[in-house]
Structure formats: C-alpha cells, structure tokens
Image 1: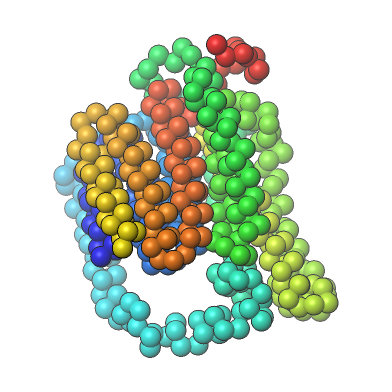
Image 2 (image 1 turned 60 degrees about the vertical axis):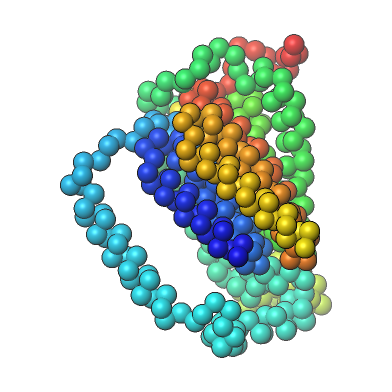
Length: 326
Length: 98
C-alpha cells in the first residue's frame, strides 16, 4: 500500500522531469525523485541502500548537477522533432528487453528464489560467528564481498581521475562565460545573518554525524560510502556559505588530491598485510590472533579507506566544478 | 494504528507538496514545495521506522534532514548568484556581522 503510493509519486515526478524544459526545476525534481527512491528502499527494508541513496542521490548529486548547470547554463535547447525518433526507438527497445527479462525473475519475496537458497542463509546464519558485526550488510559488503567493494572504491577513484582530467583539480581558471545571475550579487552569502548562524550551528554536527556513520556502520546502517558523502556535504555547506576560496584555504586542492589515492592504498594495504600474515588477499581473520578481532579491525580499516576516498573525491569534484564557474 | 494513520497523513502531505512542485508557476513555489516535501519525507522516514519496529531508521531521516538543508542552500545560492563558488574576497574572513 505504502509502496504503491510511493511508486505513483515516483512516476509522477519522472513524468514532470521529462516534461520540463527548465533545467533548474528538473534538478530540483531529480532530488525529490532520489529521496522517493530512498523511501521505497526503506519500505523494502534495505536500510543501507536507502542511506546511500538519501546521501548521494538526494544530496551530493543535486549539488553536482547545480555546479554543472553553473557551467552549461539553465535552459535546454529545444530538440527538433525528427531528432528524437532514433533515441526513442533505442530507449523503447531497451525498456522492452528489460521488461522481458523481468518476466524470468522470481516473484518478489519468493522463498524458492536462488538468492534465498545458498548465499543468503549462509550470511544470515553464520556471519555472526565468521565475521562478527551485528549489521550483516556490513559483513557482506566489507568482508565476504571485500573484493567487490575494493573494485567499487577503484571505480570511484577512476571517476575522480576522469573528472580531474576533464575539469582540472580545482587549481586552474578558464574563461568560460558564466550564466548571468538573476539577483544583484552585491552582498555575499556570508552577510546573510540567519543563513550564516544556522550554517555555523549545523556544519559541526554534520561532520560529527559523518564520523558516527563511519564508525557505527558495524552496528547500524551506514559505513564508509555514506560517511564520506555526509562529511563532504558538511564541507560543501561551508563552501556555499563562506565561498570556495576560504574552503580551499581550509583544504588545499593540491594536497586534497592525494587523499583518494591514500584511501584506496589503505584498503589495498589491509589486503597486502593479510597476505603477509599468511592468509588470502583481504582475509582479515589472520590480522591478529583472534579471527573475530581480526575481522573487526580489518573492516574498520577498510571502511576508513572507503570513507577517505569518497569524501576526498566528492570535495575535489565540487572544487573543480565550482572553480570552472567562478 | 496511530503510526499507520500518521503515515497516511504524511503521504497525503507529500502528495500535495509534490503537486505544487509540478504545477508551481514560479521557481519559488517549486523550491518551497520541494523543501517542504523533503521535510515531510523526513517525518515519513521517522514514522516508518517506528511503524516497522526498527527505530534505527532514524539515522536515515537525520541524514536526509541535514543533506536537504545543504541542498536547499545550494539551490538558493545557485539561483541568486549563478554559481556555487562565489565568495566575497573584499571582506576579511572574520568580519563582524551586523
């Protein structure tokens, strides 16, 4: 019932996004779309996924979209009607293929589905004895599927390299004409008393909350990815209120550019150390004498690596985008 | 029961706020509507946690509440200044605000 209502709202927002030609409004509605998706994940009990969606989709990607809009301008050009035919065919065909594939999938909640046959029972029954954390998602993500998560961090790092090559590391200026602001930008954001005071109050709790999410990921929803994004959004708030230059004095982009690599190398180092101690790559059980303690330390260390990489990548990308539009 | 009624009421609120966001003639209507829809969703997530017996869902509501604030400030700043990075270098960093 709640699902149906949320799905209807989701469809309505998608329709509105497609119909609009104002990009700013489309960005607003996209953030709403993301948070609706997060609510649906919550209803489906996928708390960690909902957490990521709420932090990344609704927060950070909205800010990145805005930063991109500041470079490309706010209106989308009208597309001539004959140019939409080929994309329409491709999209419809892909949609049909996906619908056809979904016919073969087991029904939602089907107990005989393959995923409920061997992997999930093992995780649910044995992860407390094998890995330890009460949050099974964390044990799957960080320990059983440590290789996959390592790959994901690698992907984030690669994306960062790509943005760096396209936009520069927040250290160079270009001569692109910025879109004209609507208001008279005579007074800076910092002069807005209410905004400044509220932001001053909020920034520190955001950062502390990010640390809580980082270190509490074993016990509740959360972990490195979400914590990195939340930490970055605290820095974004500072940069929004005080301007990008004070934020860059706080975190010099040249030095910050090392941190994605540091996080990834920390993750890899845990794997190398476990190899040196006689186990497989990323087998944390051998890190210390007690296997459960080893798992715990290993998970904490790699989550820290993930958090460092994600936060540094987000902040760097934000700096690069914002510098381009100054 | 109480939680269920609250959930339904909040869903109706979200629906109405979203209707304003879709129809809203001016951008201000839309920004305000989306912000209030976001606030309603924070409430919805909190109530849902209690409805489903897992109050640790509150973390997600808290996250979204904090991030929604940042997002709204970003939208307003973009709308007013046309860029997210504007600062004003003339004033020294520790100016006393009147």
